[in-house]
Image (cartoon, rainbow, N blue to C red; front, top):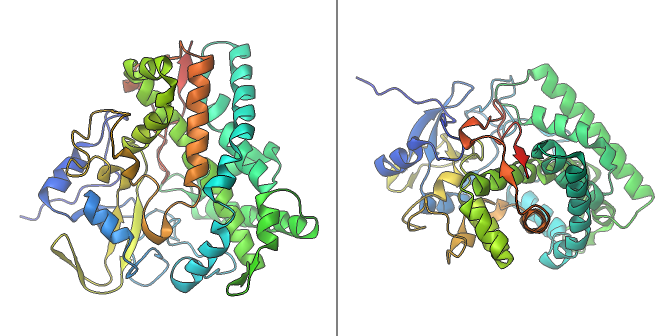
Length: 404
C-alpha cells in the first residue's frame, strides 16, 4: 500500500510551535515528499546540513519557470517562483545573477545599513508614540509592524510612504498560494511594474539621496551598469521583500517573547540582550512560509538519497533552524546561544538575503523601543488564538493584539 503524500505547508495547531512533521521528516529521510497547494508533489528538505549544502550548490536552480518544474500555487502561472518577470531580466541565477549581486551589494554594505539606524529609530519612536496615544489595546500589525518596514524601504528607495497600502496589497497578491486568481495576479504585477518603472524614470532624471538614485548611477568597468529592466525588477523586489518579511517577523518575534513572558522580562531587565534575542527569534521562527525551491539540473544525491534531474525540491529554512544536530536543545529559547547567528533565516549561498543587515537593524530597533517605552507590553489573548495569514507564501499572522 502506497503511503499518502501529506499536504504542504503543514498544519499548525499552535502557530508558535513547529509542525510535528518537521522533526518526523528529518528523522525519517533527508528528502520527504509533500504535495504543494497546486497539487504537484515535490521533495522537502528539513535538515540543516542538507539545506545549507543545497543552497550553496550552483548546480541547483532557483528558477521554476522551466519545463518539468513543479508549480507552487493554484494560479495558472504556478506562483512567484515560476512566474516570468516583466522584461525577462536575466538576473535569477548564473553569471547574470552574479553580475547583478556585485552591482547591488555595494549599496547594501553593513556600514551603509547601520547608518540608517538613527532614522529607523525616529520612525519607530513616532509610531510607538502614536500607538500609546491612541490607547491600549492595539493591533501591532496595523500600528507598527506594517508601517515601519514600509516607511523604511520607501525612505531607502525614495518612494512615497503614503503608498504603503498599495505595496501591501501588491505583495500579498504576488505571494499568493491559494488566495488570489491569475487575473488578480496579472493586474497586481502590471500595476507594480508600472509603478516601479515610473519611479526609476524619475530617479534617473532627478537623482536624490536615496538607494534607487544610487543604483541608477552605479556602473562598473567589468559589469557595466544596471539596465532599465534590471532597475525595475530590483525596485519591485526590494519593495516587496523589504517590507513583507520584516513586517511578519516583528509580529512573530513579539508573540514569541510575550507568549512566555519571562523571555520579554529578561530583555527588559537586560537590554544588552536585544541582538541575541533577535537572532534567537529568527532561529526559532515556526511560521516562515513554504520555503525556497530548487530545480535539480542533473542526477545527484542529497544526504545519500538519489534525486533525479528534473525534480523540484523545497527547502524549509526554519525547519533547518530546529535541527538538534546543529543547535543543541533546538526548542529552547536562549539569546546567549553561541551559534544562533548561524541560522538560515536569511538563506545561504549566492542567493542569501541582500537586505539581512537592514532587517536586523529594524528588528533590533523595534525590540529596543518596546523594552524602553512599553515594559508592560502583553498579548491581549493567548498564543493559541493567533490567526495565520492563509493562502500566501510568506506566512505570518493576520494581526497581533497587544495591551500595556
